[in-house]
Length: 249
Image (cartoon, rainbow, N blue to C red; front, side, top):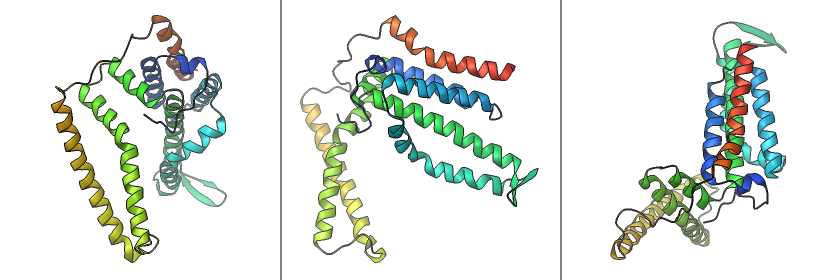
């Protein structure tokens, strides 16, 4: 299974079992989400924790920032809120901004960015296969882990099909840059869906003929030792401590 987000590095974070990293990131994200948006110091502390984990994992800051641009649509939404919000307003550089909108924009930006960075660190330090293994060890429903397994397994196959269909369209003079030729693109998407559906049926029938009974063979190995759980707990515990300190200050 290929994971374009995974960085093959030697670090203590990479060596942790996948299930402990998944739980740590989940708990950290929950703490970030429930933190009141007015606690600016707490969010600064969370950012420091992310920076520490990135340094320990040897994940470059540029790599993280480049891939964090996936949240740009939400940032654009946040930019609109100060202008569209209601209630009390403040003047800034000749613009009238809503105080509630400013808080809302900050809430989306801060929590969204921290969540994206935490997820990127998880992906950078854990292969796709290990992520699925970790979910299996955490007793995630079998149907979910199996769907994820097949999705990752055949994602490259679908990408190759889409690439060949695009080359065929271009060879026939269909340039997707022109709006009036979008029909060919839409037809191609439909054909790709039907081809994928038929391939899925063939794969499923082939699995049944080989003894598939609703569950993949168990190959998850030994669970994470207690020492790894204690080490991974440092992130959510530290973030919870920051949140409590900010609330009591």
